[in-house]
Image 1 (cartoon, helix red, strand yellow):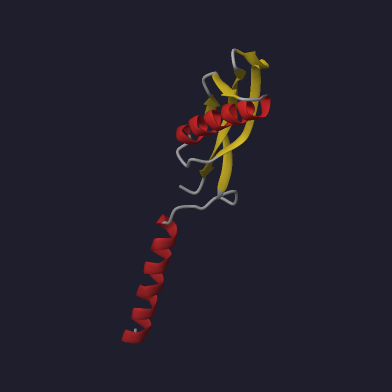
Image 2 (cartoon, rainbow, N blue to C red; image 1 turned 180 degrees about the vertical axis):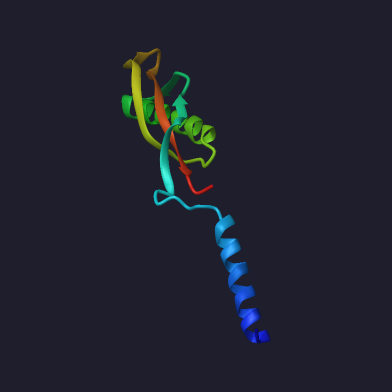
Length: 109
């Protein structure tokens, strides 16, 4: 067998060997919402001068918790449940609730 033909076959065999041991990439590989890696935040209370400010305070606290919980820092399919409606509380307003959420993750890893 000529040397050039032998080198071509050896190279082809090396490529085929690498292909056999290469990781299989799923057709659904990519960023996905993984609900089982999410959870439920603790109940938090938002306080403000009015109901809008109190609600924004609550949402900010819940988002800070959920982003810190998810490995990627990105949440998905989140839902806030209000446990105590906005009401006058002393000199301001307060509202309480918690958030259920999933975590957006790269399924290629």
